[in-house]
Structures are given as C-alpha cells and as structure tokens.
Image (cartoon, rainbow, N blue to C red; front, side, top):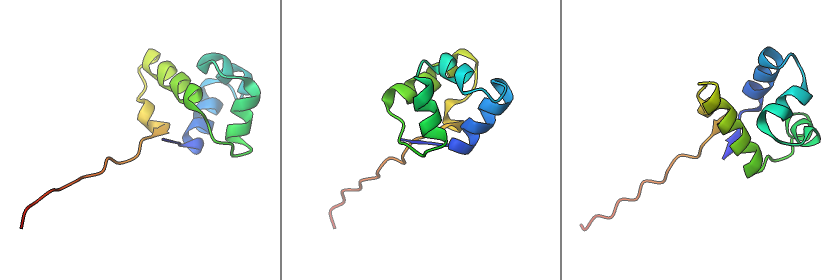
Length: 80
C-alpha cells in the first residue's frame, strides 16, 4: 500500500481548512504522525490507512483516491 500524499494534502486543505489537527481528529491518528507523513515523508502505518479508509467510507468518498493499492500478480500456469 502507498499513500497519494498530494491528494491527501489537497483534501486537508479543502475539507479541513489547512489544519493537521482537524485531519488527525478525523482519521484517529496522532497529529505529529500526520505531519511527519505529509511533510517529512515518513511511511504511514496500517492505523493511518485504516483511519483514511473509515473516514472516506463514512463520507461517501472513494478511499482509492488516497490509498494506492498494489496491482495483484497474475500467475499463469500453462503446460506447453
């Protein structure tokens, strides 16, 4: 999993009035962690992703705009 930081920053600017504090309250993660993820490029953990997913689900927003899921592997077993 990866995070679309540009989209999340835009969401924070538009929905949370440029406030890390309001964003952290909405997703249930420490404000310092939100800041470190968005500004210092720290890696978000599962709690961060779960918080974004829950907030998006509660507000009828597609979480895939913010959470980038890896493409599944395609395994083909063929006998030639």
